[in-house]
Amino acid sequence: MIQASDFKTILDQYKIIFFDAFGVLKNYHGLVPGIEKTFAYIEQQQKEYYIVTNDASRSPLQLAESYHKLGLHAISPDRIISSGMLAKEYLDLKVNNGIVAYLGTNNSAHYIDSSGLHTLPVSAINYTNIDQVNAVVLLDDEGFNWFDDLNKTINILRKRTIPAIVANTDNTYPLSGNNEVAIAIGGIASMIESIVGKRFIRFGKPDSQLFMFAYDLIRWRLDITKKDILMIGDTLHTDIIGGNKFGLDTVLVLSGNTLPDDAEMRIRSTGIVPTYICKDAVIG
Image (cartoon, rainbow, N blue to C red; front, side, top):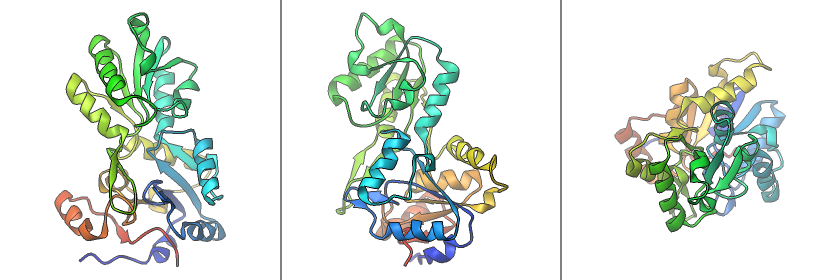
């Protein structure tokens, strides 16, 4: 059986901490109990910390406010680095006009709205405007009618030779204390991709672009190397392999997608090996 390491001892070795969000800081019930102690300690030690997340469901401001409502006030908008930021950057560079159709909530559309493009939910696309659609962005698993709008998305991509952008590559996310998961937009994207036979553009972990984006944001202020950064996540196929490939040390916590009873089996079967394993990201 894999032995868990002492989280505080690990934390003390690094200057910069990257946290995943869901399964590390919070779950379906709210904050992971005691996580506020971790942030109090990090601030006391004057370490830098960021939430590096595939969550493109809301803007950084809204995501920060969601933590504040739960009682975690250490997270400000500038501490959140979301895959939605990369989707916005791509649209700014590659899509100059027309309609960007999206799957997701109105809040998730913040990223593409701020690009100055004409954004519409997939549900608003019809025969009168489909020829103006120049990109489709998959942002979140909520905010639309799964049957009607998934079918419409497939048909838009069949009729239009346009980029499809996935702003959250997660296939699932943990629901509650009974170890259930729900389908995330990354899983929906994989299904649509296989049906239409086109390759989508994906942003978010495990892709190294999100880590590079975060790394560059810090490097212009601080003299650091990758050895100064620790990535903490709950999922082998996104957080851990993404951090490993980018050259970061990684902590797999067993408070989210990867459960204590099958962690060893998953590590052996995937070959994705974290630097450390901890029960959770809580100090004390």
